[in-house]
Image (cartoon, one colour):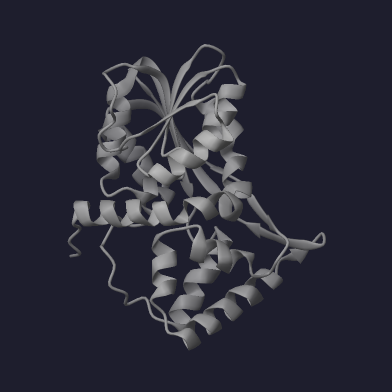
Length: 273
């Protein structure tokens, strides 16, 4: 059984996002922002609602919530991400903080959201409990994660290329399974165990539209953390073969003058009694 050191994994992810912050928006922004309407609809974000965007990153969801008239606070444990979010959305309040120990009082918010942040946490169950704590009674919570690599094609082609041409035996801090919450039954069970009710889990059909066949490899190597660290650990020859294999995978999805990669996400939402 794999033993997870939560502090080591937390520090690894935090350092990784400090490094990736300047690239994330260009690397993944065009696909991750596609969840905004569904995510905000799930928590009934509207004018006057007090909303917390946890793991806000560059502030994409915070910005969309503010556009609806919500009173928004964005939070991230990466100082570089907070700086980027403030640059993009100077009128929104952003602050540094940890999803696993939210710096807010009980029942402070009408809604809490997290867009693709849960899979980067050392203690995701603790983060769910914290979201429940800061919600008012009747408030709503929603998060997104990627579907499994058999469906989220960009991840699948990269993982297969690493397994075929490189090595996955890389010394990294162990973390929770990356695709744990891609499984609807596991997501539902965990939310109910955290005290949530009215749980709904569904899939969102996202597409990653790219101009370059190298864009997936470049995004994963610069705009992420775990996969980026695995890629950095490969030998130069293995890395070249991995890049070429991912490029071929992207080229198989050529259309409309570019490339269109299926990248479905799982949206989970629930309420606090």
